[in-house]
Image (cartoon, rainbow, N blue to C red; front, side, top):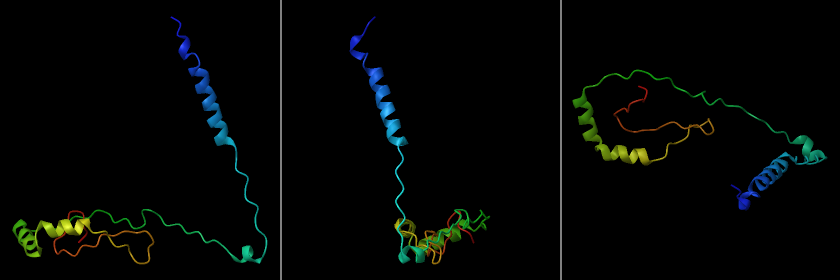
Length: 115
């Protein structure tokens, strides 16, 4: 069975692959360093902050009476208050760039919150 209309497909695919591989392999020449007093006084300071630096391990939460928790939730305003809080963005920690910590004003803790 001879299908002449698709014979060009394999050479075209190989040509395309070779062209794309060549385009990725060609390096960009580095920029020439500028000379003068402006470049000698300017220094870049790099800092590293571990992603697990602010990790807080899981801790067992104290068991509370479900009736007391339900009463506290009703006094706060019910589930709608918690839904509104969940939609508000968290405020970042002062002093740690990019760090996020949940800030909740509810008297009732959530699963996973530390006491």
